[in-house]
Image (cartoon, rainbow over all chains, first blue to last red; front, top):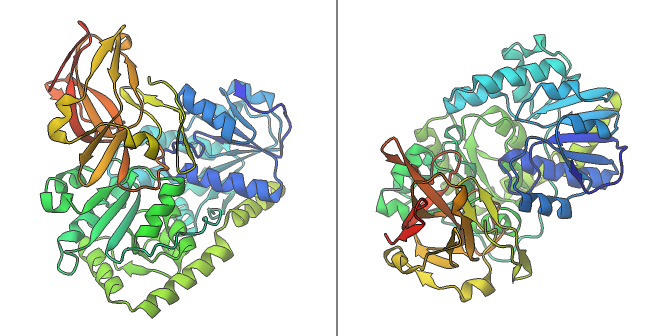
Length: 357
Length: 152
């Protein structure tokens, strides 16, 4: 085991597969919010990295940058003590449950694997089985939205574990944006380019009348097959800019540049990128799906369904909005962020849940 | 794996090389480093001087201009080929999507090196799972059995 702390007693042991260093997906961003939220609220947390993919140089960076971190195997977890273990793991290993010597095990499900499989059209049966075993073996389950709770119940997971609650994700307020105005022709897309996020929609859109001089900035990882095929069109290739997996100042620069964030997903358990945009006053155009609707309320432009024509129509609606209408919408979004989705809100909600547990 | 060297630009510390399977790269490009790095276009990448030394494939720092962006490998990469299965590998410069890029200059991107192998009459692509990167240019071919590097 490797650790950067001498302490062995904590308020909570946070078990995760990733930290906010070279994140694999949205979980790393949630962990980043939890780290800052727990720090602000005085919760002493150990961050225990399990089944991670970090190489030695990344491990060194984590140990130097992150507070109270340990990297080890399941057995070595016994060296630490806390009343609660909070699991974020998505490399589901139910054996973990047998090695935790805590009073309560809280399992946050960042996405339901059954819905990931359906929305990405992928066979994920092994992961589904393991996640279900984790659900059954934990003391309480946290879902990240009420929409996920409805999915949970529709899957009859109540029979696996009826002690289920909703805690929304949160993030620290972004650093002040630059004084550079956003480019009114830049459309943003942020996230992993998996099929369920429909990244090809923001490319297709550039072929439409009224969007001939727009540019799409993509802050994300990976290529869907269809996106790759679209990039063979030389006219599109010049107007679709891949920025890679953006973090820190690059993510800020991305949000500074774009006039709108498009989220055409068919499934979002929560929609962390929507919160990122809300906090910065960036307008959002998205599908009217559970997690996004819950986060954004009416402070967004919604597509009526998951289809590309509906997304196109919503983008047309955004184009037609006046400056005053956009300002009203983004001010409302910012207020929603401050009232519901900061790192402090998330940390307090978890503290309350741990205490109640 | 590449050497770890600290680079600074605009107050940012660039360090920590990253190597995952057959994807190799450094963490950050830097303005200071970038200015001194030789520039190439996809048509001129055969001029990037690749070499072998003591079983290691040496990839010099480079920046490749493509799609209106600079794809930058800021450090000398030393890839130990002795751990590779003896075979021919395509040396691909790829936009490295596997690491957090914190460079606020949006037209600068991190390049990495992907060693592609032919499996079942198909060359692996940088875009494939689990690499999920974007091919920029073919820099050459490596025969890891003989240690020869051939220009594209």
